[in-house]
Image 1 (cartoon, rainbow, N blue to C red):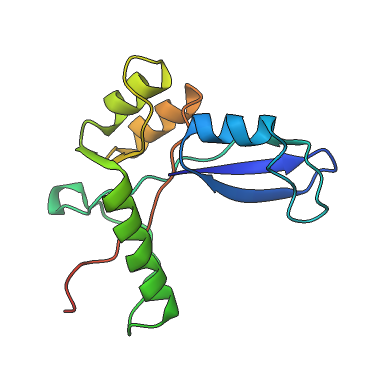
Image 2: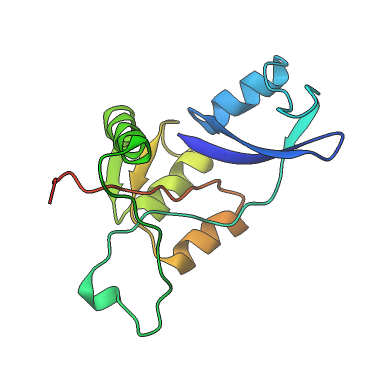
Length: 146
């Protein structure tokens, strides 16, 4: 799954999810994507900041690291995050720390178009975005109930 930040001809911005970059192109070309605010079918991608999920490892922790949002208690938000994780794990290939390399291969047509997920450093994510490769960071709830 790929999340794009879109903008319509009227200047309204909104986010939309697509199965792949190719799916986005096909849907826009067919006129199936429209502004959620005004209904205009004239939309285009805007620049997005990278947001990649990366499991925290003790060696990666830095003093002064920013706080992160948390969800607990089994509410609607937590169930939705777990459903999203299930969807990604079922429909995308896990490529681990090879995410940046595999994302480039897909983007440049060296590998089959498909959804992938894995890990990347903030620097690697920024480089992907600078190359025009759309990536997104997902909240990744734990599988345990602890």
